[in-house]
Length: 160
Image 1: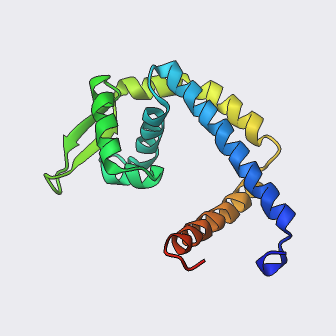
Image 2 (image 1 turned 120 degrees about the vertical axis):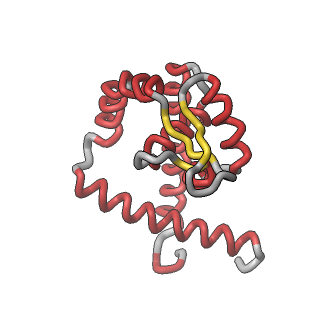
């Protein structure tokens, strides 16, 4: 048994389910990206900007943090997305050293065109769960994510 009485088998099953879900989500993201003629990381960057933007644009560091990737990679990819007219990058009014990124009308239209397919996909994936169940599951997954970051830090510094 693990700490708090969780059987090893249940923990192992959970981890393998997460690995499977991650793999399937990667395939789904690749498909969405292909429909727009971009890469999977570029799709995720667009989705992060879409979610984080509250009307003033989003700094690259916020996108990098959300996606848990290096800020330099975000900079490199957002330049490409800007050249493809999927986003705009403008100097931050608060600090000229930083850029604020926003989706273009083209990107919003392309994403909107996929919305019916995305809703159908979400219905397939989450159809057995009501809103309260999803909230509960998200709360538990947020806790596990936080604890896994802590465990990873402990392992990297040799505490575990």
